[in-house]
Picture 1: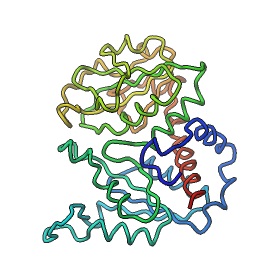
Picture 2: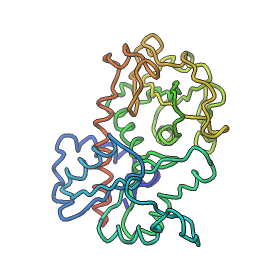
Picture 3: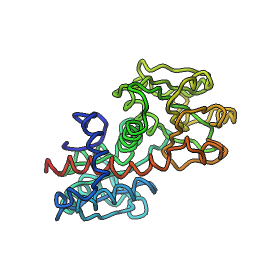
Picture 4: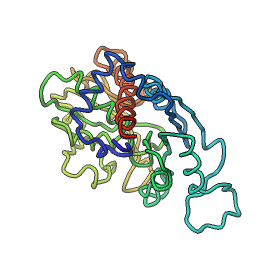
Length: 311
């Protein structure tokens, strides 16, 4: 693996998931691999699970870790040919090259604006780091994708599935804030590559990018979609067609114990209790969100391991 900015960067997904699960038995078995190597993590936006799990993964491999909260430090310029006489103090061309001298791997987290769809889909931050950095790049969530989360999700489903082809449902749920599409996009892409019976459910108007959903089944009735489900993965996202807008916050789409049935409940966290999902689900044996969050470490670790082996 030479970088991990999209799921397609994994050559053998099934083998990668298998190896990630094996890592959990002995997380320090490759501790010498990252000795005298440095991971620099750049956060243009806040993070809890991604930040801590990626740092832990790197340290499990013996790496040094440096973290920079970019949004609190300095304004970077990404436009070509710009006259930098306003607030931006440094161009990505210099910044990426300089950071590359301090790092063996650079990990970047940068959210979308949710204002300009065309601009967000260009992925200006992570695309420019890939272009100008001289070391491998890892996507810790970008404007349109969260491949580390999707890998952790796939690991979790593999561990908990009870049939060869489980039914997996991605369900929209209400939320008071407008949220990006990155987690949902990457989960869809990941499930399309796995041997699962996959269904997406959401209210009309919340269709994701059709270039991502492709031929995936979409059902606009949540209870119908949940029938015989083995896993229900819940996430809110704003409108794609009316980009970044909240069209409705229908409380009837909250996940309840009655609707969930015997399915396993998944969510990337953080989650708003009794808005996205009721307490009776989160606090039940059907919820695997904590174990799912734990797998963030091993998703990051197997990615870092693959990159380190190719340095």
